[in-house]
Length: 207
Image (cartoon, rainbow, N blue to C red; front, side, top):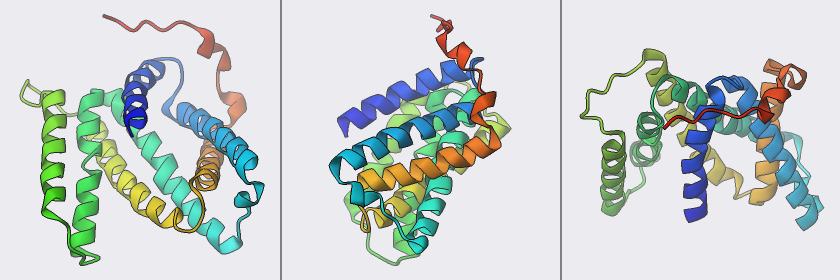
């Protein structure tokens, strides 16, 4: 979890720099999903090749998970950070756990422990402090809309992912879902239209 948190924190700043003029949000998410899928497929094949087998009915679920829970989460996040600070986008996107708690409590009608609500309040308060919401924050309409969409998609990612790992191992689930997401965006933005030459160019990171 610590490694995931570290990588995710680096992801926001690096992605914002890349999106500042190197790649579009669709091109970046397409490369990320295809690259991640290739890695997960390689690991799954090395561990247990049979884990990649999938039936027609299960593929429908994985395809839904890949488009909503992977493709949309990343793309909406990228669009938002091009319009607003990363910290503000994350503050809004990470209301996803709150949405899940509300879903579990009022839709599934399952009890949610008090400490979960306390943890959510503390987490969102911490994000608000990082975003410095008191210092004359202005919100961009498109950035706000896409960050809210990212929160909903992320909540779906967690809920669908919980169901997915109950049916197959995490490596094969990640391989299929990222593969579907990569294919989805490759149709929107074919790989041969991506300016790969720009990836070798230095980026000004500012001060």
